[in-house]
Image 1 (cartoon, rainbow, N blue to C red):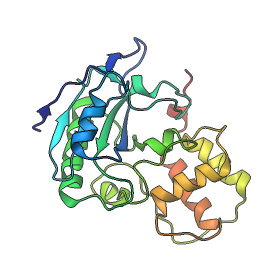
Image 2: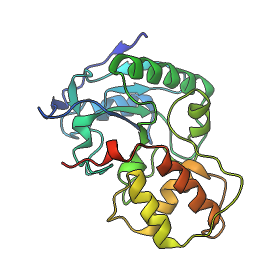
Image 3: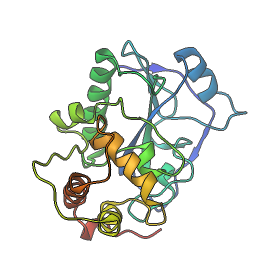
Amino acid sequence: MEFINYPSPNHGLRRADTEIEFIVLHYTAMSTENSLERLCNPVHEVSCHYLIDPSGICYQLVDDSKRAWHAGKSYWRGYQDLNSRSLGIELVNSGYENYPEAQMKSLIRLLKYLIQSFKLNPKNILGHSDIAPSRKLDPGKWFDWKKLSVNGLGLFPEVSVPISCNKQIFLAQAKRAGFNPNTNFENILKTFRDRCRPSFIGEFDGYDCALMQKFADAFNIDDSSNSQ
């Protein structure tokens, strides 16, 4: 896959005891020009490995072997330094609009390339909101997780019937999936709905629980009981 090399000084070394396991998706909430300026400005201390603009042009800002600064304070399946264990992809999008077809096609090509290159589990494609639900919304409810799933990437659980459930059971399943157990119910529900039920605005129900259970079931729990 072809990239435009656009080096950012904002990176460091990955921790010695880590390897790349995850890919984290973000939106920039600003234009391509402003995004590149911010991600390459040492004052802001933020970066990513790749940025894809609305037309599908892909920029590489940080070498895959380096630790880009995109995840911030985060948690997934016992890990907290997600920067050391992930590749970060920024998508130029406001967060309040559909992602263009050209951009999604480029993202899918990039994801397949990275998964093959690093022998990653295709389920381990996460949104910034998955790993930091208390403070982040990206890639947001307009991002098409189902399109990724159809292409064998990420997770987009679908169910036909609800199950009996309550908030405690929902949170227990969320913890089993990988969410931070210290995150409150409202934040996890919003994050999860943005990913799995983006058009639904009703009360918490058995479909939320059925979807979260299926989401958690998709992971091998023995392999995901990690400690930092």
